[in-house]
Length: 168
Image (cartoon, rainbow, N blue to C red; front, top):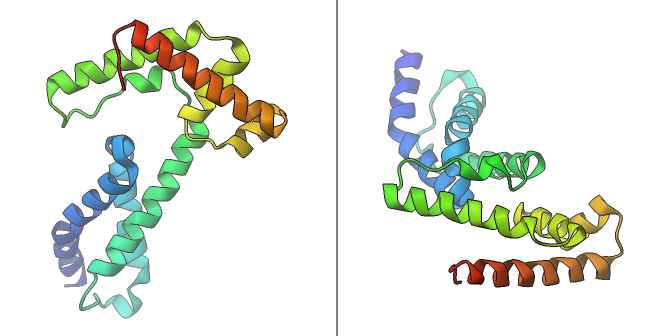
């Protein structure tokens, strides 16, 4: 009986989990949604004392979904850089949006290749979600150098993208 109740709970709250993932992860949601959902359901299964389903599990499930999404996004930041990964698209989006996203990714990579090496490294790390202090530590730069390379590199990137017809 418990498995049937749990199965009903899974079906009932799957949408809530996916919604929380989409809100927290944004464009990365499509890549991590299944893993987050699985982790949330495992946590829910383990959190039920005496195999009793709580009367109002929605708040627990939502908090667990947000927590697991944050963990998954942090994991993506640590393992990804702007590269082939940027070509992956959310196929639930309209086809024209997918094409535009891929084209923008290619334009960003092309523009980055035209920027000096240190600025490119700083901007790539910045776009991957690292803050100034993390970039400073990663490349062993002083704070002001890291901050300036990010700011100047982003300005270079904007100019190069504007020259290609992309505007903010």
